[in-house]
Amino acid sequence: MKIVDAFFEWQKATSDKKLAKMKEQGLCPDCRGKGYHATAANAYIYMPSFDYKCYSCDGTGSYSNWENPI
Ligand SMILES: [Zn+2]
Image 1 (cartoon, rainbow, N blue to C red):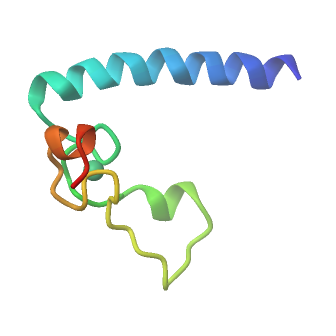
Image 2: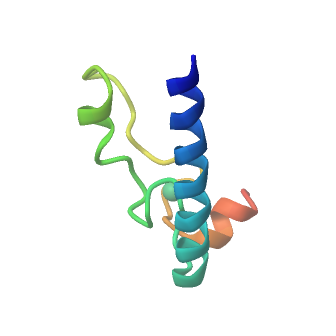
């Protein structure tokens, strides 16, 4: 599955770049500082009961909370 490997390589490179930028701005890399996943409904099958809150930063959108969860 070469195409899958290539995709994950691309994803890793992109996330590394994103991570540095988010750290610079002090924002949670998972939700880009929003505190919730706004694109989750588009990316996955829509689930009405799904909680879109970002648990990586506990909904604060802060990089320090993402790095050191409470
Ligand atoms: Zn977050």
